[in-house]
Length: 358
Image (tube, rainbow, N blue to C red; front, top):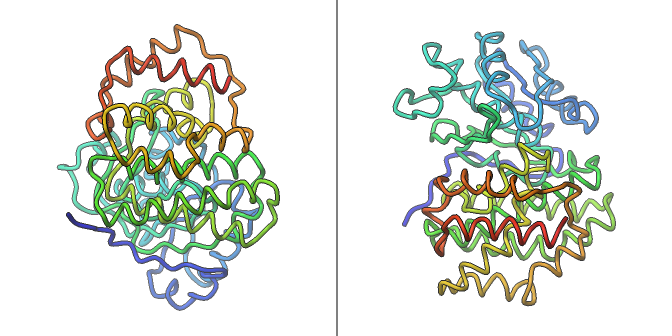
């Protein structure tokens, strides 16, 4: 077994402001890829503060589930930069990773991101998460939208050089985003624990992440301004990101992608609602780890979700289900998921989610 995560993690309140000299030493020209929320949560002001007297470009129009076209646009507009900073949730950070590759390798076409044999390096990447969920700040993954479908690529060169992790940027998150991003972290931890790529190293991080989320997410949802609860969720999210950097994700992610692209369901919510079904199938096929997770949730995750008022405000038709199942059956996630999944099993997963959450 092994454990590889070359990202330097700096964690704590005001961690950006307390590392002014480090930022100043990184380069002269910076590209910040972010969204509009970074102006509201104070993160952009902090970064601009520590980059005083540097040349700074800002792209602040990153959409949710960024399409390949946005990556191409940014990489063509901003060619001469030393450092690419991903500031925000998973979308800005994943976009920053893709842009860093294309700026460094000007001969590449955007679709070449998915052929890791065509490149070996990227511009140095700094990640600063402002949500507690994606874990992208400590992974080698970037998920983009290609031809209307979510599609991830991975390469060791897009591990961030440094990640600055400060829970205070999550204090302005509303109830919906707080829940969906936390459920994303929970999915990472549980899927990474179940994955056939899991190791004792990753399992230790996964179990700790699940424990924290189980204990503190319901409390946070009742007290969104509580800084201690916010910090706990940010810590759990970071641990879960470290887990999937080793293991990747499993079928719950593959199942959830179509709900996001076709129905607009937030990624974390769209993924997490499939965890109970994945656990059921894993248990059925003798996976003892499934029992460990089920026991942590007192026998059923559905009661935990009821406590959090997890539901889908969307219509799912039989046509939707069969269309999505035909995509999932070919997903690479199945090869690392415990249990056996055929088309009928995948259809059943969607129908169970429709019955439970719609």
